[in-house]
Length: 259
Image (cartoon, rainbow, N blue to C red; front, top):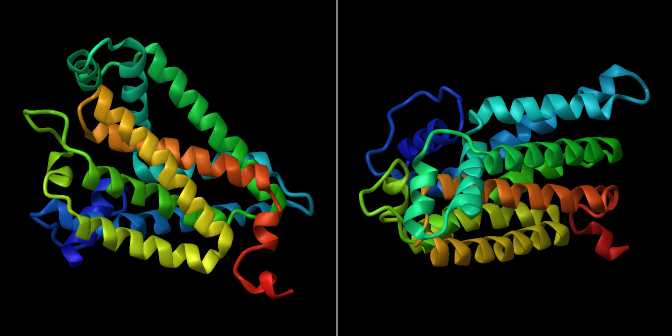
């Protein structure tokens, strides 16, 4: 079990977690939401520096620091997947061509634009959440986004016949791995209250639509598509949280229902 946790952290982050990795990469999948919790916690801690600057703070500057911490801690792994997905979406006319484009290490214009838009959306969302004091929600949203990677790995076949970097995570992924990841995230969502459950529900809907597209147009999932799915869910949830703003903090938990 511990080896699966080590593999999850070493795969998704730069954190030098001690210990041996598992030889069965699918055993790392239930720990993906734990990695999301850690990354979200890191960004929440960074957001607290806004209170140290002055009475009014500097939300945009601290949001930039959060964004930088997010990029460095994950090695921009999922952004790379998003870029490849966007290039394949914009330049591929069939499954074979899309897979070929995603394997190309060069960055195309579609990929570049997708990364810029994703980073801009995250920066704006972080800034807004800092302004209203609701950055604690980043913890749950990052957990949910990584759980959706497990959802995709367990529900879709690996698209490349010859295998690939993420094939060991996808091939053999089962309902058990999915249920374990969902159980951890559902517990966290329950702590956050009805809005937390709503965020999880929204993520499932977005992931289902994205997964259906991947199945139809790519023939399954790849490592790049797992990363892209993470970014799509993460950005969507962050933007919704930013739009809702302060009520997210007011209605955290369940006590407000009794008032």
